[in-house]
Image (cartoon, rainbow over all chains, first blue to last red):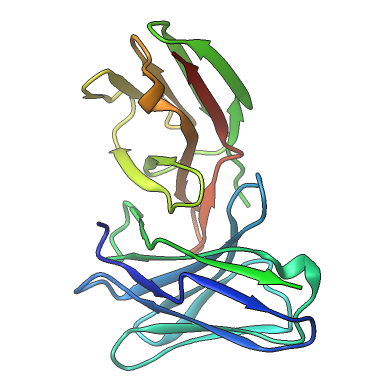
Length: 113
Length: 111
């Protein structure tokens, strides 16, 4: 158990809909990262937050947005969903050290029908 | 942006064989991490290497960081079916806050 929690574990929705994925980092970790992993693909970095502020952005679509709240949990919002958005979405947290180790949650499997 | 290329991309071996996975970059990394990911689960951190030439052992797994800190390797001795998974190297991108993952090596160990 990494200490990172993600909800929900599974999400099935229709095209055009909007969903929110939630992540709680490990106790004490200030950084939260979001990744997308499509079937048999590598991890695609979406966005990073540090102590409530956006710190780095990857290939995140304009239909996607995220935020980190004062209690450090984070939410990833996906809107106008398309079939191609079906994927595993992972959240990871780190303590912000220069070494960069990340601890991953169990993921949310999103299926868009 | 720094890139991390892993080789081989796929590897299927018999139980008891040895193998090495490589992670290469043209850029220097301040540290590199290795993760293992099983299907449908999040990657799990195996090790961090920081110093050029550093060697770390984790049971049957041996990790090495290149002298110039541009490459790393993972050697597995006497592989077991439980070693099956996706192996990822990763590291912080110098000068930014981005974290770079390697292209991945998918290992299957047959009983």
